[in-house]
Structures are given as structure tokens and as C-alpha cells.
Amino acid sequence: MNKNFYVYILANKTNDVIYTGITSDLVKRIWEHKNKVVEGFTEKYNVDRLVYFEVHNNAEAAIKREKNIKDWKRDWKDQLIEKENPKWEDLYERIIS
Image 1 (cartoon, rainbow, N blue to C red):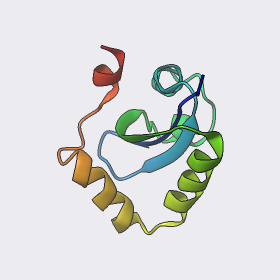
Image 2 (tube, rainbow, N blue to C red):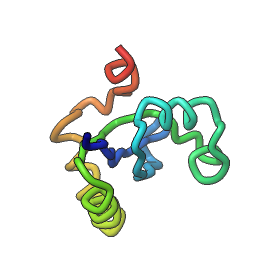
Image 3 (cartoon, rainbow, N blue to C red):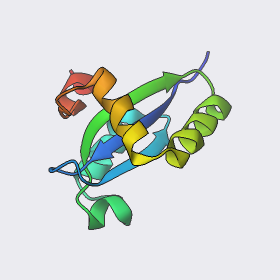
Image 4 (cartoon, rainbow, N blue to C red):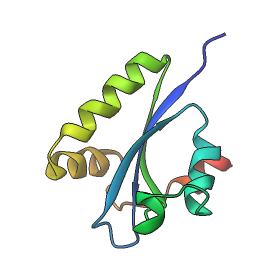
């Protein structure tokens, strides 16, 4: 059985701070960010809105993609988000329902 891995991007309320991460359990990880269980950058800057995610079928591909996105200019990341989520809506409710 293959396990999925997710590369995700979170934003703060005003979309001026974003964070790119990776997980094998997207619902749990985003819940942790929203409930400030995760100490560090996302907690400090209130980055807890899921605005983008993609699925990979292996860890290596997801890690490579996460590193790739983290190296991008901010404008490129914004374009990636807006292609799938033009209004920068919080997608968390969609993944839990």
C-alpha cells in the first residue's frame, strides 16, 4: 500500500507571510498549525490558513518538491497558489469534510 505525502503552503490572515511544509497526514498537520501545537515560525507569525497543497505518492518526490518550492521567489509561490486558489481561501474545511 502506498502512503501519500503532501506538500502544503500556509498563509497568515493577510497573506503577507507564507510557509511551505511537508507531511504524510495533512489533516492532522494543519490542525496542529491551527491549534498552535507546532512551535516556531508558523506559531510566531500566525500562519495557519491552508491555501495550497499537492499530493505525492512517495516521500522522496515530496521532499524534492518542497525544497524546490522553498527556493522559489515569492512571486512564483503566489502564482502557484493563485492558479489553484485565486481567492486564497482556507482549504482546511475542504480536506476535513
